Length: 337
Image 1: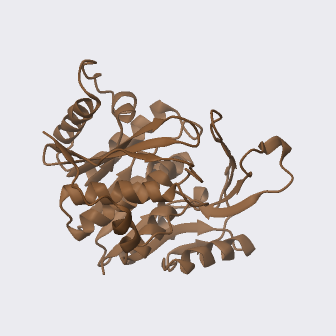
Image 2: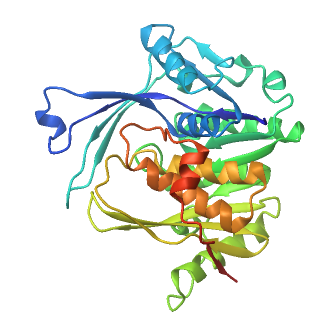
Protein backbone atom coordinates (compact mmCIF):
# COMPACT_ATOMS: atom_id res chain seq x y z
CA UNK A 1 0.00 0.00 0.00
CA UNK A 2 1.63 3.26 -1.14
CA UNK A 3 1.58 6.45 0.93
CA UNK A 4 -0.15 9.32 -0.87
CA UNK A 5 -0.35 12.92 0.39
CA UNK A 6 -2.79 15.56 -0.82
CA UNK A 7 -2.89 19.21 0.21
CA UNK A 8 -5.81 21.59 -0.13
CA UNK A 9 -8.95 23.14 1.29
CA UNK A 10 -11.99 21.16 2.33
CA UNK A 11 -15.24 23.11 2.39
CA UNK A 12 -18.80 22.84 3.57
CA UNK A 13 -21.02 22.60 0.51
CA UNK A 14 -24.63 23.77 0.71
CA UNK A 15 -26.76 22.86 -2.31
CA UNK A 16 -30.36 23.28 -3.37
CA UNK A 17 -32.68 20.53 -4.51
CA UNK A 18 -33.05 20.14 -8.27
CA UNK A 19 -35.61 22.61 -9.56
CA UNK A 20 -35.08 25.13 -6.76
CA UNK A 21 -33.09 28.35 -7.00
CA UNK A 22 -30.83 29.43 -4.16
CA UNK A 23 -32.75 32.67 -3.76
CA UNK A 24 -35.98 30.76 -3.06
CA UNK A 25 -34.59 27.83 -1.05
CA UNK A 26 -36.04 27.15 2.41
CA UNK A 27 -33.93 24.08 3.06
CA UNK A 28 -30.48 23.06 1.90
CA UNK A 29 -28.36 19.92 1.60
CA UNK A 30 -24.96 19.66 3.31
CA UNK A 31 -21.85 17.86 2.05
CA UNK A 32 -18.12 18.21 2.64
CA UNK A 33 -15.68 18.35 -0.25
CA UNK A 34 -12.88 20.07 -2.09
CA UNK A 35 -10.65 19.06 -4.98
CA UNK A 36 -7.79 17.44 -3.09
CA UNK A 37 -10.05 16.02 -0.36
CA UNK A 38 -12.19 14.35 -3.04
CA UNK A 39 -9.10 12.81 -4.60
CA UNK A 40 -8.05 11.60 -1.15
CA UNK A 41 -11.35 9.82 -0.59
CA UNK A 42 -11.21 8.06 -3.96
CA UNK A 43 -7.61 6.92 -3.53
CA UNK A 44 -8.34 5.64 -0.01
CA UNK A 45 -11.28 3.63 -1.36
CA UNK A 46 -8.94 2.24 -4.04
CA UNK A 47 -6.72 0.88 -1.26
CA UNK A 48 -3.97 3.49 -0.94
CA UNK A 49 -2.58 4.88 2.34
CA UNK A 50 -3.79 8.47 2.01
CA UNK A 51 -2.94 11.48 4.20
CA UNK A 52 -4.76 14.79 3.81
CA UNK A 53 -2.93 18.04 4.67
CA UNK A 54 -5.03 21.09 5.53
CA UNK A 55 -6.22 23.39 8.30
CA UNK A 56 -9.75 23.63 9.68
CA UNK A 57 -11.27 25.66 12.53
CA UNK A 58 -11.20 24.22 16.03
CA UNK A 59 -14.98 23.92 16.30
CA UNK A 60 -17.78 21.49 15.50
CA UNK A 61 -17.34 21.97 11.73
CA UNK A 62 -13.67 21.07 12.04
CA UNK A 63 -14.70 17.91 13.89
CA UNK A 64 -17.24 17.11 11.18
CA UNK A 65 -14.56 17.45 8.48
CA UNK A 66 -12.27 15.09 10.35
CA UNK A 67 -15.08 12.57 10.79
CA UNK A 68 -15.94 12.82 7.09
CA UNK A 69 -12.38 12.05 6.00
CA UNK A 70 -11.87 9.25 8.52
CA UNK A 71 -15.13 7.60 7.49
CA UNK A 72 -13.55 6.87 4.09
CA UNK A 73 -10.19 5.77 5.48
CA UNK A 74 -8.26 9.03 4.92
CA UNK A 75 -5.63 9.78 7.59
CA UNK A 76 -5.93 13.17 9.31
CA UNK A 77 -2.56 13.24 11.13
CA UNK A 78 -1.63 16.44 9.24
CA UNK A 79 -5.01 18.17 9.58
CA UNK A 80 -4.25 21.27 11.66
CA UNK A 81 -6.84 22.97 13.87
CA UNK A 82 -7.10 26.74 14.10
CA UNK A 83 -7.99 29.85 12.16
CA UNK A 84 -11.28 31.66 11.85
CA UNK A 85 -13.65 29.59 9.74
CA UNK A 86 -14.34 26.73 7.38
CA UNK A 87 -14.73 27.80 3.77
CA UNK A 88 -18.23 27.40 2.37
CA UNK A 89 -19.75 27.28 -1.07
CA UNK A 90 -23.28 27.15 -2.38
CA UNK A 91 -24.47 25.14 -5.38
CA UNK A 92 -27.67 25.99 -7.21
CA UNK A 93 -28.41 22.70 -8.94
CA UNK A 94 -28.86 22.85 -12.70
CA UNK A 95 -31.49 21.03 -14.72
CA UNK A 96 -32.22 20.76 -18.44
CA UNK A 97 -30.93 23.89 -20.23
CA UNK A 98 -30.13 25.70 -16.94
CA UNK A 99 -26.56 25.20 -15.73
CA UNK A 100 -25.58 24.80 -12.09
CA UNK A 101 -24.26 27.94 -10.39
CA UNK A 102 -21.58 28.12 -7.69
CA UNK A 103 -21.28 30.92 -5.11
CA UNK A 104 -18.15 30.94 -2.92
CA UNK A 105 -17.96 32.12 0.69
CA UNK A 106 -14.41 31.13 1.61
CA UNK A 107 -12.51 34.36 2.23
CA UNK A 108 -10.25 34.21 5.32
CA UNK A 109 -10.86 30.50 5.75
CA UNK A 110 -8.52 28.63 8.08
CA UNK A 111 -6.39 27.05 5.38
CA UNK A 112 -6.05 30.30 3.43
CA UNK A 113 -4.16 31.70 6.44
CA UNK A 114 -1.80 28.71 6.61
CA UNK A 115 1.95 29.37 6.78
CA UNK A 116 4.37 26.82 5.32
CA UNK A 117 6.28 26.50 8.58
CA UNK A 118 3.17 25.37 10.49
CA UNK A 119 3.60 21.94 8.94
CA UNK A 120 6.41 19.43 9.35
CA UNK A 121 6.96 18.77 5.66
CA UNK A 122 9.93 16.50 6.37
CA UNK A 123 7.65 14.16 8.30
CA UNK A 124 4.84 14.52 5.75
CA UNK A 125 7.00 13.47 2.81
CA UNK A 126 8.86 10.68 4.58
CA UNK A 127 8.22 7.39 2.70
CA UNK A 128 5.67 9.13 0.46
CA UNK A 129 5.12 7.88 -3.11
CA UNK A 130 2.87 10.65 -4.47
CA UNK A 131 1.91 14.24 -3.65
CA UNK A 132 -1.16 15.89 -5.19
CA UNK A 133 -2.21 19.56 -5.15
CA UNK A 134 -4.27 21.84 -7.42
CA UNK A 135 -4.46 25.41 -8.64
CA UNK A 136 -7.50 25.96 -6.43
CA UNK A 137 -5.31 25.81 -3.33
CA UNK A 138 -2.84 28.28 -4.83
CA UNK A 139 -5.70 30.66 -5.67
CA UNK A 140 -6.97 30.97 -2.09
CA UNK A 141 -4.62 33.81 -1.12
CA UNK A 142 -1.39 35.36 -2.43
CA UNK A 143 0.60 33.72 0.39
CA UNK A 144 -0.82 30.31 -0.52
CA UNK A 145 0.85 30.51 -3.93
CA UNK A 146 4.19 30.42 -2.14
CA UNK A 147 3.08 27.60 0.18
CA UNK A 148 2.13 25.46 -2.83
CA UNK A 149 5.48 26.16 -4.49
CA UNK A 150 7.31 25.34 -1.26
CA UNK A 151 5.41 22.04 -0.91
CA UNK A 152 6.23 20.97 -4.47
CA UNK A 153 9.91 21.79 -4.07
CA UNK A 154 10.03 19.96 -0.74
CA UNK A 155 8.35 16.90 -2.25
CA UNK A 156 11.01 16.75 -4.97
CA UNK A 157 13.75 16.94 -2.33
CA UNK A 158 12.38 13.65 -1.01
CA UNK A 159 12.05 12.11 -4.47
CA UNK A 160 8.26 12.12 -4.29
CA UNK A 161 6.27 11.98 -7.54
CA UNK A 162 4.19 15.17 -7.80
CA UNK A 163 0.77 15.74 -9.34
CA UNK A 164 -0.66 19.16 -10.20
CA UNK A 165 -4.16 19.80 -11.54
CA UNK A 166 -4.60 23.27 -13.08
CA UNK A 167 -8.27 23.38 -11.93
CA UNK A 168 -8.56 27.04 -12.95
CA UNK A 169 -11.41 28.90 -11.22
CA UNK A 170 -12.09 32.36 -12.65
CA UNK A 171 -14.00 33.34 -9.48
CA UNK A 172 -10.83 32.86 -7.40
CA UNK A 173 -8.07 34.50 -9.45
CA UNK A 174 -7.35 36.08 -12.82
CA UNK A 175 -5.79 34.33 -15.79
CA UNK A 176 -2.65 36.43 -15.36
CA UNK A 177 -2.31 35.56 -11.67
CA UNK A 178 -2.86 31.87 -12.40
CA UNK A 179 -0.43 31.86 -15.32
CA UNK A 180 2.35 33.51 -13.31
CA UNK A 181 1.99 31.06 -10.43
CA UNK A 182 1.51 27.88 -12.45
CA UNK A 183 4.59 28.49 -14.57
CA UNK A 184 6.66 28.44 -11.37
CA UNK A 185 5.13 25.10 -10.34
CA UNK A 186 5.53 23.13 -13.56
CA UNK A 187 9.31 22.52 -13.27
CA UNK A 188 8.51 20.47 -10.14
CA UNK A 189 5.59 18.48 -11.57
CA UNK A 190 5.61 14.89 -12.83
CA UNK A 191 1.87 14.39 -13.46
CA UNK A 192 -0.20 17.23 -14.89
CA UNK A 193 -3.92 17.72 -15.51
CA UNK A 194 -4.27 20.41 -18.17
CA UNK A 195 -6.87 21.08 -20.84
CA UNK A 196 -6.73 22.84 -24.18
CA UNK A 197 -7.96 26.18 -22.78
CA UNK A 198 -5.34 25.99 -20.01
CA UNK A 199 -2.63 25.55 -22.64
CA UNK A 200 -3.84 28.56 -24.64
CA UNK A 201 -4.87 31.04 -21.95
CA UNK A 202 -2.63 30.14 -19.00
CA UNK A 203 0.50 28.86 -20.74
CA UNK A 204 0.26 31.17 -23.75
CA UNK A 205 0.56 28.50 -26.44
CA UNK A 206 -0.25 29.34 -30.02
CA UNK A 207 -3.62 27.90 -31.06
CA UNK A 208 -3.52 24.67 -33.01
CA UNK A 209 -4.63 24.54 -36.63
CA UNK A 210 -8.44 24.59 -36.70
CA UNK A 211 -8.45 21.90 -39.38
CA UNK A 212 -7.10 19.36 -36.87
CA UNK A 213 -9.37 16.93 -35.05
CA UNK A 214 -9.91 17.63 -31.30
CA UNK A 215 -7.59 14.81 -30.25
CA UNK A 216 -4.90 16.02 -32.67
CA UNK A 217 -5.13 19.54 -31.23
CA UNK A 218 -4.76 18.18 -27.71
CA UNK A 219 -1.75 16.07 -28.69
CA UNK A 220 -0.19 19.20 -30.21
CA UNK A 221 -0.54 21.13 -26.93
CA UNK A 222 0.72 18.22 -24.85
CA UNK A 223 3.75 17.81 -27.08
CA UNK A 224 4.66 21.47 -26.55
CA UNK A 225 4.02 21.20 -22.80
CA UNK A 226 6.30 18.19 -22.35
CA UNK A 227 8.99 19.74 -24.55
CA UNK A 228 8.94 22.92 -22.44
CA UNK A 229 8.86 20.92 -19.19
CA UNK A 230 10.55 17.57 -19.86
CA UNK A 231 10.07 16.62 -16.21
CA UNK A 232 6.32 16.17 -16.89
CA UNK A 233 5.83 12.48 -17.64
CA UNK A 234 2.03 12.24 -17.83
CA UNK A 235 -0.71 14.67 -18.87
CA UNK A 236 -4.48 14.15 -18.73
CA UNK A 237 -7.81 15.85 -19.36
CA UNK A 238 -11.37 15.13 -20.47
CA UNK A 239 -13.54 16.10 -23.42
CA UNK A 240 -17.02 16.94 -22.13
CA UNK A 241 -20.03 17.45 -24.35
CA UNK A 242 -22.91 19.26 -22.66
CA UNK A 243 -26.26 18.33 -24.18
CA UNK A 244 -28.02 19.70 -21.10
CA UNK A 245 -27.35 20.01 -17.36
CA UNK A 246 -28.79 16.50 -17.08
CA UNK A 247 -27.08 14.81 -20.06
CA UNK A 248 -23.37 14.99 -20.90
CA UNK A 249 -20.83 12.99 -22.83
CA UNK A 250 -17.39 12.33 -21.37
CA UNK A 251 -14.18 11.05 -22.93
CA UNK A 252 -10.84 10.74 -21.15
CA UNK A 253 -7.40 11.66 -22.52
CA UNK A 254 -4.02 10.44 -21.23
CA UNK A 255 -0.67 11.44 -22.74
CA UNK A 256 2.49 9.47 -22.14
CA UNK A 257 5.76 9.19 -24.09
CA UNK A 258 4.45 11.26 -26.99
CA UNK A 259 1.26 9.22 -27.44
CA UNK A 260 -2.31 10.31 -26.64
CA UNK A 261 -4.58 7.53 -25.38
CA UNK A 262 -8.35 7.98 -25.26
CA UNK A 263 -11.22 6.18 -23.60
CA UNK A 264 -14.44 5.58 -25.41
CA UNK A 265 -16.96 8.43 -25.16
CA UNK A 266 -19.50 7.69 -22.41
CA UNK A 267 -22.96 9.26 -22.46
CA UNK A 268 -24.16 10.19 -18.97
CA UNK A 269 -27.94 10.47 -18.76
CA UNK A 270 -29.89 11.79 -15.76
CA UNK A 271 -26.89 13.35 -14.01
CA UNK A 272 -27.45 13.40 -10.26
CA UNK A 273 -24.45 15.57 -9.30
CA UNK A 274 -21.64 16.71 -11.59
CA UNK A 275 -19.54 18.33 -8.82
CA UNK A 276 -16.44 16.27 -8.15
CA UNK A 277 -16.44 14.52 -11.51
CA UNK A 278 -13.06 15.98 -12.42
CA UNK A 279 -11.60 14.93 -9.08
CA UNK A 280 -12.86 11.37 -9.60
CA UNK A 281 -11.12 11.36 -12.98
CA UNK A 282 -7.89 12.72 -11.48
CA UNK A 283 -7.95 10.05 -8.77
CA UNK A 284 -8.45 7.37 -11.41
CA UNK A 285 -5.43 8.65 -13.34
CA UNK A 286 -3.27 8.68 -10.21
CA UNK A 287 -4.44 5.21 -9.19
CA UNK A 288 -3.58 3.85 -12.63
CA UNK A 289 -0.10 5.37 -12.50
CA UNK A 290 0.53 4.06 -8.97
CA UNK A 291 -0.58 0.57 -10.03
CA UNK A 292 1.38 0.66 -13.28
CA UNK A 293 -1.67 0.04 -15.45
CA UNK A 294 -1.31 -0.01 -19.23
CA UNK A 295 -2.38 3.37 -20.67
CA UNK A 296 -5.51 1.93 -22.32
CA UNK A 297 -6.64 0.36 -19.03
CA UNK A 298 -5.73 3.47 -17.07
CA UNK A 299 -7.75 5.92 -19.14
CA UNK A 300 -10.76 3.61 -19.31
CA UNK A 301 -10.70 3.21 -15.52
CA UNK A 302 -10.30 6.96 -14.83
CA UNK A 303 -13.12 7.94 -17.18
CA UNK A 304 -15.43 5.25 -15.82
CA UNK A 305 -14.72 6.51 -12.29
CA UNK A 306 -15.74 10.02 -13.32
CA UNK A 307 -18.89 8.78 -15.05
CA UNK A 308 -19.98 6.90 -11.94
CA UNK A 309 -19.41 10.00 -9.77
CA UNK A 310 -22.12 11.77 -11.76
CA UNK A 311 -24.67 9.27 -10.40
CA UNK A 312 -24.34 10.08 -6.67
CA UNK A 313 -24.92 13.16 -4.50
CA UNK A 314 -22.03 15.00 -2.88
CA UNK A 315 -18.50 15.89 -3.90
CA UNK A 316 -16.90 12.49 -3.28
CA UNK A 317 -16.79 9.44 -5.50
CA UNK A 318 -17.87 6.58 -3.24
CA UNK A 319 -17.16 3.66 -5.58
CA UNK A 320 -14.46 1.05 -5.02
CA UNK A 321 -11.93 -0.14 -7.57
CA UNK A 322 -13.89 -3.37 -8.15
CA UNK A 323 -17.14 -1.49 -8.72
CA UNK A 324 -15.52 0.81 -11.28
CA UNK A 325 -13.84 -2.10 -13.08
CA UNK A 326 -17.16 -3.92 -13.25
CA UNK A 327 -18.77 -0.84 -14.80
CA UNK A 328 -16.01 0.02 -17.23
CA UNK A 329 -16.19 -1.28 -20.75
CA UNK A 330 -13.62 -4.05 -21.07
CA UNK A 331 -12.66 -2.91 -24.58
CA UNK A 332 -9.29 -1.05 -24.66
CA UNK A 333 -9.19 2.68 -25.25
CA UNK A 334 -8.20 4.38 -28.46
CA UNK A 335 -4.62 5.35 -29.27
CA UNK A 336 -3.95 8.53 -31.24
CA UNK A 337 -0.37 8.62 -32.56
